[in-house]
Length: 202
Image 1 (cartoon, rainbow, N blue to C red):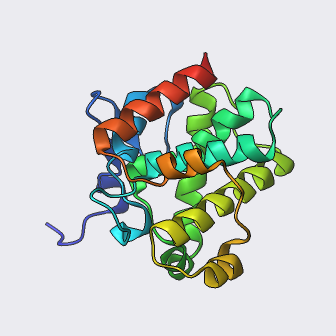
Image 2: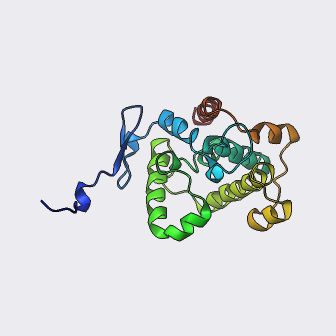
């Protein structure tokens, strides 16, 4: 018996609480459930957990913030693209949230897996497998705006450093900033993510 297992024998799927088994190398849209995504993202920490507050700042809460920033920047944007913004980090429910410096260390393999998962998620919920470049760039701009706010409110960055790394303050209303940048419990993040998904997905 060889001590090394073949690549084919290595388990590349994860079992979800819904009972689905998602293959990370060849993900099927049929194995993707929004309840699994919401549950997972609400328990994954942004910034490797290096944020202030009584709770982690979850990826679920981050995606809600990104969608709010996109609405602020593009008030008339189509609901499908707001849904795409909400789901832009959805692959992290199975692969976790790796900070950008570590992604740079890993190189292209991580991105390949992430893109396959995101395409399967898009198909599952009626979005194009690959978004148009214009929409992708608008979501990335909203993501950078959210990162600026998180960096300055929660992660200890100065405004000048955050501006250099992430761009400018997106200018959300004060009440929205206060709510979205106060870390929620996992239960609240999961609930609000699901509610927002339902309002956008129909």
